[in-house]
Length: 200
Image (cartoon, rainbow, N blue to C red; front, side, top):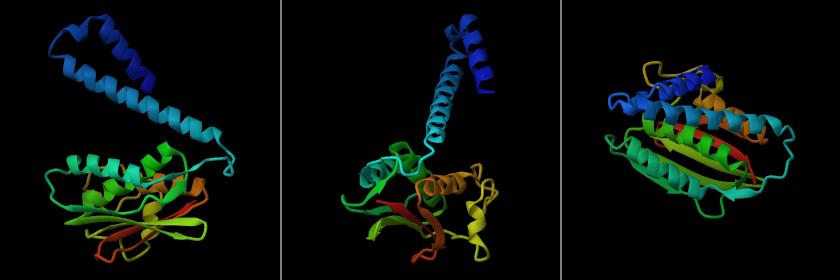
């Protein structure tokens, strides 16, 4: 399907549709999204080729990625005033691919921002060979009965909200691939807590 979309875009360019002002915004949006989809596919293919969990991946700090994501998400949810706290020091590092780390925290923090009322908080601590990262919000939380079902691909707690329901499932796959673990808990703020165990 992606190749078909790309071919259609190429045909529109050959037909000179980019020269028509009414088509220019749509062409730009489609081109940007096609490029992004191709990047995602390339990343997933690279990940699929890495079959050895013990492959040498250097530990890298999570703090810079968290701040980048916070800056982006505050803009995305600019119409929703809330506090976004990052209680993570420069020694909090995880041994995982940078793009995987961005995708993992991007999925989880977006969920937290979407469902929170007034607060999103990220904290981290070390426990032996694992970095424990808690992502808390003060929203509606997870269902009391069998919250782990949300970690399955395609399952969503709130079917009325936007999204495909695969964010938690993809996050679980990323964490499992590096030998970590993900838990769904109750936040101290009475909302949701996602706890990550990431190898250091």
